[in-house]
Image 1 (cartoon, rainbow, N blue to C red):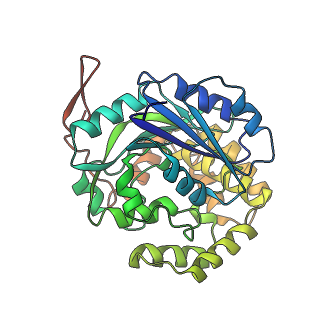
Image 2 (cartoon, helix red, strand yellow):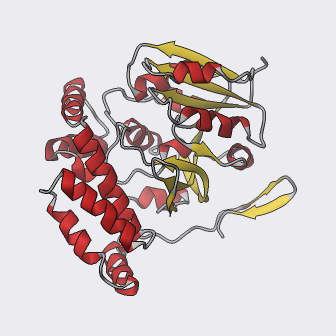
Length: 339
């Protein structure tokens, strides 16, 4: 195979329930000059069998013993043939024009090293939950974000490979925030932006290693934010993060965090109070000591106008205006990403 324009880099670990749909969404892209590089990170289910059921020369598979997301991504960067990387997770779904939009944008705007996007979030069954529009789109706005705020949805980023490899790749000590730590280092010297429209569907999945930040321990958050503030992370800190994470890697915590997140999103981002209450009651049955969820349950009975007024008054200090981004021509259509 000739060297493609894009490497779609997908780590996969025990993703048998979702990876067929994820791969199909990549193969259906309107932009066809890509390779789909899948790093099978020690899966013990039918993930590899499902991958091998596809007959498409653009798919490449590297299997390794389980080393975690950062290790799998670094392996992928070593073997990627393209100069551009489109990150993607094995339980997510690409919209058909995702690669075309980001490739055309970054090639027409060489000042950007990373291009992210908005995303549509779905639940574990694939039902729409809410649309995430980036809090910051222009580079100037991204630079104004608190260091605690990750500027990109990892599964939706598109970047120049050499920028990431020159930065040393993903830090394997940054358990669950390897992407955030990487962006923080890169953005010191490189420009980046977000396209506001959704280009992928991200699946909220209770089996994911990433859980709602509020369910992490104070020690975990302290180490993480100290690392992001100082842009330093020792091996000892990485070991501590991993130990805390493994202790929290239980069905009770993962499912409790999942239902709590759905409850909040159906309350704040997609006003469906009945669904919010349904999920909040589930998380309270799992973890009745999370007092804030009782407050959210009470708030779910407020009228939408009152609830949204409260929400925006609290968030007003963090909201940033959407930028004026240039018009990009794709398939003879003019798309203005500031609209």
